[in-house]
Image (cartoon, rainbow, N blue to C red; front, top):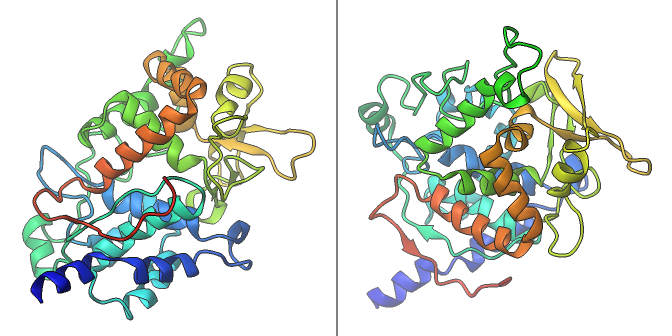
Length: 331
């Protein structure tokens, strides 16, 4: 029946299993594709503009070379290629849906919550994409929020103000990066609380690669492939109060000339790393309040980061999505 067919389409058990089966890989980065799948999904969605009424994951514009060429998307192509092989066997989903679903599955496999996925994003043809976005067919920025590449995605560092008096506070010296993050996430309709939830959600996982971004190393060196904003315990979020607040993270310059913050803990194999955009969540008093709240209430973080993730991934998809009927795994 038509109803049965509709339910079959919304039960994603088989495609979720295929994505999950592709995540563990001893030959790839810390043994997991999870962090890169999460980043890909995030970057598909982070181009939404409320004012322009376009961007975000609907349209699947990450399929196009123009969007893949955004410097903020450097290093994503291996994940796109890997998911495209899964798409070949699961063409019932658009690639726009598949790339975002991979982020949901990654969160779950890495120990985060099961978040119900909405199906129905379209893959624009080149013609449709150009009608919406102009010649590139992609949602590039207009530079208003300050990303030097003109991308709508957040930049990791806009530099400190060399003209700032010595006695100025860090929030004043680093105002460019702080304002840039707030403006970018405001465009994504996110509050300060949702902004902090989304950045911490993403950056508890994975690592930066010198050859892709010019930054280097894992954020949470002990366990970069699992949810580590632990309910009871330290984890990534503790690096703010116990590291940054106490001057434990030192500013360094990478081999590519980018500044980042590093902390060495005796028995860790690698340094812990923060980008200036991560540190900005401590430098700015309003963001810091949210970091401190989450540090003291890890369960609230788990729930609210899930809600913010769902909101981010559905921007620009209003009226298109049907919730999956897949039986859930992790609460």
